[in-house]
Length: 253
Image (tube, rainbow, N blue to C red; front, side, top):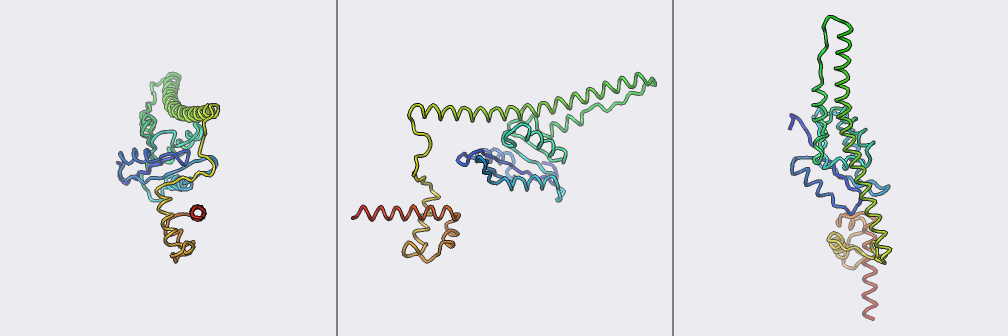
């Protein structure tokens, strides 16, 4: 690590039911002290993107005078499209922010910066103006070619990442269509209740402490805070618990 360097791991998933922990684990395996930012992009809803924007602003302004490095598991986790990825890459590079892709190290900013530093800085001085101009033009052309080649390599990686994402979505759509045509149920049946460890624990807290259910003394807001759930989730669980109680009463009649 560079002196005064801060590592920030950026993890992104495209669906709320996807597991993001693999990305987190891969980054922390290499950088155990990395600060982790998690983003979920689900259709029009983006969770955690404001945190990402804050980080981008922080590293670009660099008020703390640090050497920032953003680490992604792969290029596809930086941007959903090639054009956006290339623009963000160039913007961060121009602000001296390092970027590392664990799966595509060939386009890390350190590699690109090394390419820039290896440019030919020779200026021809043969005494003949025409000869000097020709040689310097060739040197500049070689430097421009080297930079263009490096940029093309970066764009190629983002293009491939975008194509792979599109292919995954296409295969998923085709698989769902095939399942429907074969008469298979796709998705969760309407009215199905998803039971998780978190929901079980939260419902136990609601039954025990929420005053609506008998022995509890807490109001709705206090119960939400104790259970660690938001308002919508609380009232969803409350409704399900009341329905379960009603069903149990009917069964005993």
